[in-house]
Length: 238
Ligand SMILES: [Zn+2]
Image (cartoon, rainbow, N blue to C red; front, side, top):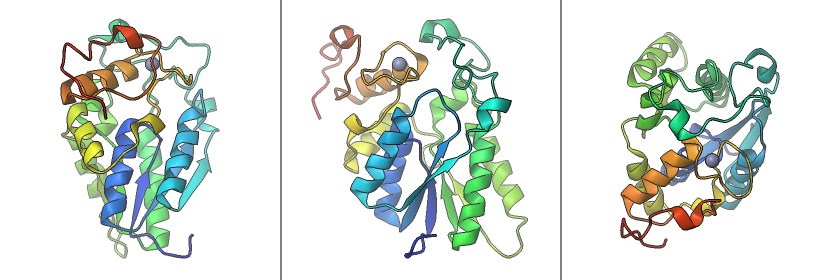
């Protein structure tokens, strides 16, 4: 562990939600970021994550659990032969093709072990309201309550798993990120992993909708940049 002991651990992907979370928690306590390489189809998010940690001077570790890809190929994030669906393809699905099986429980389990070892008492993760609605059961309030109940069985170390954005809309998360000085250009959301985001995968669509609702122009570059209705929503530049 690092010289200065962290009081909390943030599970950090380099995506929008967890970057807003990292900026927020960094203001509140000494924290450490855990970044997982779980065999996802691109490394651009991890690069963003490392970059933000360096800029914020936050101790961080990149954990290689890429074996996960070999046992979780049902996810389009992990089986590179599967197509990343567009937002229109997955409307109404109970669980999207990009859902990674039981990934969050694994992340939280590892992060809780790191917290216990470091003497930290909080583990943060960026579950958001939209995740539950899009079939990610491991981002739900029930899941959070139950996993906390399980780790509270630890008799010596009292660690709480906290998800401050679990009832937040994407627009609310973006507004919170703006208040905390997040550099949104340095986050990555698109499932496709290109420098210029597609704007049409479910992940891009949810991010764009959040910015439109929040009333701000997303500073990221999109393949469909000229089709995004910033003006219709009276969005302002950041
Ligand atoms: Zn995309």
